[in-house]
Length: 266
Image 1 (cartoon, rainbow, N blue to C red):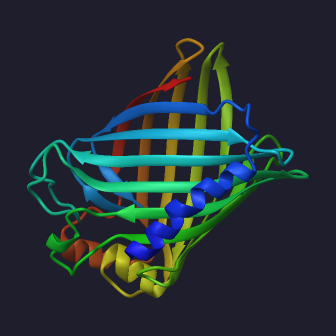
Image 2: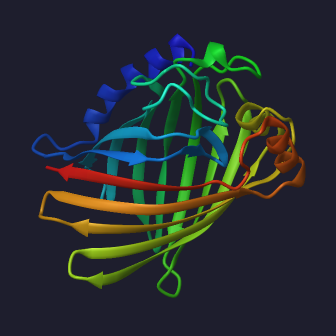
């Protein structure tokens, strides 16, 4: 991410104070997740155990039915050998991807809208075997609504920084209350990548349907401030050209992985 863009983003944050009531108390979530893989948009970044901490801060605003969110999350490799994966070896105990998100959420009629800026930082981007990968930034907007007790959604991401291309994801999510404080959530979605976006993410300039993704997440509210979740996740590449490229790289094009996380809210 260019330094000027980062500086502009940081300087813009104080302007958010114009929309936040002086007496408002932010909602804060602090947590971490352990997973046996790190997969991003169908690409296996790390094929070994990882630790993924995150911090969420959400403010109510002076605009009715709206909120301002700030999120930071990261991936830490727990093994020096990443296996058959995209990220370079040799960084156990270090953050290998860091993400920063600022977004605005708004309820408009029956639709929930969310839009903002998403920055990716790759500290070891100079070591990628298929070309340098540095930081980059996307603008995004997501729309969702409830239909027959399910929630379909559409998310559009445009990388205006390094990539200058689009990634689109459409899917549906449904939640089931199994018992008091026990929720099962099922999410299925399909991604589409523009040619330059595919080149950045996968190393091949091929526009088309990308990753078909599904997850089953079981969440338990331990108390008013603590929640625990366990998930089973799967992904597969739909475009045959990208799928064949993954096989040439020796990277699994249909990975499965599990996760276990905890979040503290206050």
